[in-house]
Amino acid sequence: MDAMERIKNTIEKNPIVIFMKGTPEFPQCGFSMRTAEALKACNVEFAFVDVLAEPEVRANLPAYSHWPTFPQVFIDGELIGGCDITLELFQKGELQTMAQEAVKEK
Image (tube, rainbow, N blue to C red):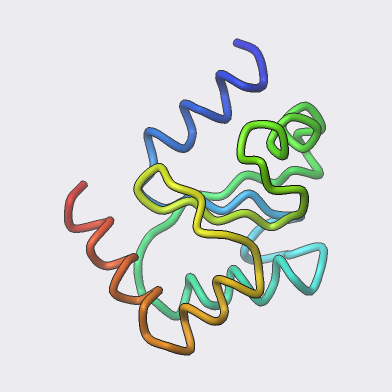
């Protein structure tokens, strides 16, 4: 399976997924750390892909999502955004609602 197909399958099979540098337990950049912390604070399960461990995904995800930077958060198959947008949604209480609804629908 090529990288684009793996990206598509990952997004479709997981209600919430973050493509990040590192893992939620051991993030490798501050943006990824803050974004993962916001998702953890929503008290929902979410999938992750460490783009540092998967260079093909890292190279192809920006073309797939039309978003150039990492991390990237997808909820219900749609790109939510990166760190700034995710944190803004969290501060407004919207991320929590979106995340809860996504896992409920699963």
